[in-house]
Amino acid sequence: MNEVSEVVKSASAKPLRLALANLGCKLNHAEGEAMKHLSAGAGFELVPFGEEADVYVVNSCTVTAEADREGRRLARKARRTGGPDARVVIAGCSAQANAEKMLIPEVDLLLGNREKLKLPDELAIPLLGDEKPEMRVSPIEESLDIESVVLPQFGSRTRAYLKVQDGCNFSCSFCATTIARGASRSLDVESCASHADTLLFGGHEELVLTGIHLGAYGRDIKPRSTLSRLVSRLLEIKRKFRLRLSSVEPGEFTRELIRVVAGEAYGAGGSNGGRYVCRHFHIPVQSGDDETLTAMKRNYTAERCARRFDEIARKIDGACIGGDFIVGFPGESKEAFERTMDWVRESPLAYLHVFPYSPREGTAAIEMPEQIPKAELKARARALQELGRRKWAAFVSSQTGKETEVLFESKRTEDGLLNGLSDNYIRVLASGPDEWIGRTVPVRLASLPETNGFSSVAARSDVLWGESAL
Image (cartoon, rainbow, N blue to C red):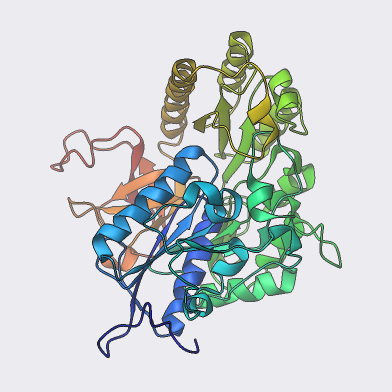
């Protein structure tokens, strides 16, 4: 960083304090860690968002109207905490795609998605005047390359998010992603491998591949590549780790990708030097009704999606399949919603993320007739969420007695229990030594003890007990 603006310059000789809050998807969190890394390298002292700071940055999300509201709420909180002399910045997707909704008095500066990964340089530029907030948002459609930062570590997290793709070429009628993120762009395979090796060297034992449209990985680079080829290349890295895929579209979960992940999944055969793919696949289905999918401009049918899910479940024992669903899309009849409910009941889905339809400026769906009343939106969401809870309980129960590996996280529960995540996405509690923290440990899954001497933290139906299988 060259010269820090007088607006944010500390009156003392102490480093300027910067607090950053991340909202939204795994990719946004990966970029937030990059922003922190760059800021620390420029001399800022990183502090928690709730503490007093000189600069507050909200790394925003605009996937729903609620996400925009949360960004504004955090900005107002920052102003109250930091006082009138702090600089408050909203960066990322809300600033890029929905700037007019983020023009609130508490904010000093809006940074677009291209600008936010130059955060220290942007903070070094003095604000132009009293008009607030100042906007520095360049057209995202002009972005031809993927913005990427090599991280030596992923903050204090036990798992690291690896950004390999950005943007989306789809034009789903409900989604503002293309407005916020631009066209699909991929990081070349060898750069991905180099970034991955750096993170693994930093001590992480799980990498999560992230992107806005991860399944489109490689189509834009030369030589052309695919997500399945990237997975195979990363598993050539000679270190012990596991690889988890973030969200992959139904149309991009190809038979080739299934073949690769099935062959490299946990328990699929040889240990491969302790390297494997997690048996956890998150797939944004959105609806189980073909008319609704057509109105959403999705590129698959419910039947095709169901066949692919069945193939994953058949070929990968213990696979945890999750899905996103939007309820109350404009024109979705009660009969169409019931078809989605039936589709979910018959599917091998283990869990659901349910979103009531949220109108987004600049999308086709906002102009569609037959907008569903809010009360009906909430009722449908509750019904599908309850079905999702039953599906999850059944999946967790089905894994009792099985062996897997759990990555235990850095904090214990209030009872002193270790808290971790299995490769197939089950939350696991265990009594174990500190040496397990931050490491993948073989365990046998069991039901939580009925009389365990622990508080209600352990008395949960959505977790299992881990018994050492060492």
